[in-house]
Length: 149
Ligand SMILES: [Zn+2]
Image (tube, rainbow, N blue to C red; front, side, top):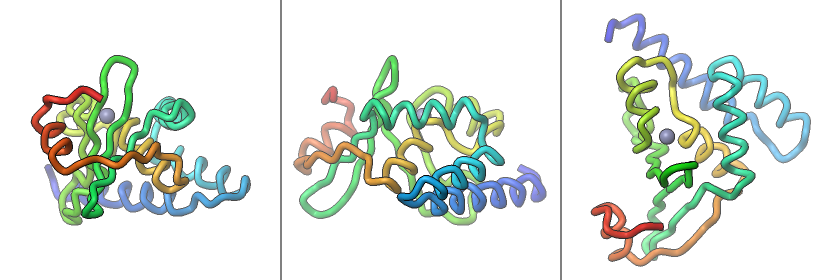
């Protein structure tokens, strides 16, 4: 990726994170946050993410040792979302196992995130995740793909 494109992407990511932080519990900040999001993400993605949250599709699994694992129930499948990869200097700071993340974010770089990642960001911010405890062994099995939700 050229340097300018990388800087552009870092800037957009900063705007995205600022938008998420802008959301507070009152209605006014909700409108404001949505406006900010619309500057960096398509309307359809924002609406789709809000819909996922409304349908209680964002699952947050908590292990006994305080680790979180996120899954989003999509229309055809369940996707695993890693909202914070923690690599500040790379173009991609999150990851989702859905096909559109691979195509639109990683390959064509058309989008910063997919609707599942956005849904996790917002649901976490609003405490709207469906929180479930999970045993460490089950988490390992989930990673291995042996457990369906
Ligand atoms: Zn996704």
